[in-house]
Image (cartoon, rainbow, N blue to C red; front, side, top):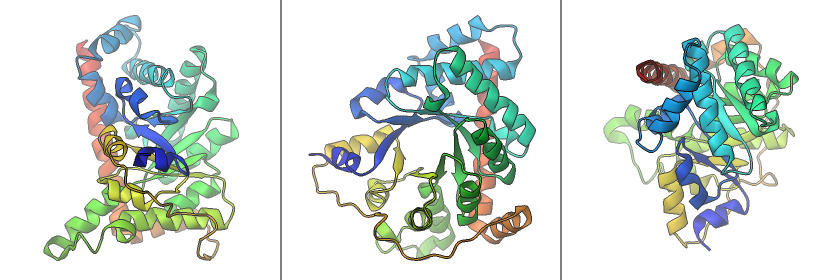
Length: 313
């Protein structure tokens, strides 16, 4: 049995891609997308006709509405392949605007429902800013399930749990990137691999806290740089993995042991954050502050590029 199949025995495998033509070979349960992945997909000759057809069908509508139609069209194609859920992201440029995020989220869900997809099969992705988390809390009360992304700090995870969001996506690889860059010549790749990887340690802490305190929010490790990080988080509720790394897992027959287990978590005290406490805790974490800001900027740039591609159609 290959490592991908072994992983599926105790972790839900999610494909991290906008390339739905690649999905079937890995048989993931869910799939996630983001502005960068959709941008990459629509620039491929395989998907250019789909982009053109979608834009043509909605020509004359405001640009932001056409963008949402494009995102949902990709989501609909993905849902033909995966049996579970697809995550579709609200424009990162709205990450600090609760009202605008709510409006976009509701419109995306309405488009899915108009296409015959029940809202239970869709996760609305929002950045884990204070505003994004509060928007998610309101959406969850309406039965709109959310995936809080760009999550780097423990305080973000706790705030998401308090908001009763469906799922969080703590980023492993980008945390690893920050610490590696910060250490410079002093970085020891061997010593900082596996369970000692700073990104792995962050997700493991969140997982342990959620399991110990009976928090129902699903933990989905994301943003992996190598299969060692995935192996060290085996047993996590979900892991969203790029096609390249899925292929590496599929190609290996080595034994994969479960690492995270709700029966083996260390006691941690309950904590809560109000807005001021959240902002201060996030500010105290230089890595999380920098990576959250950088992530929003990068997604915003790619959202702008997607706008231009659509306008050029």
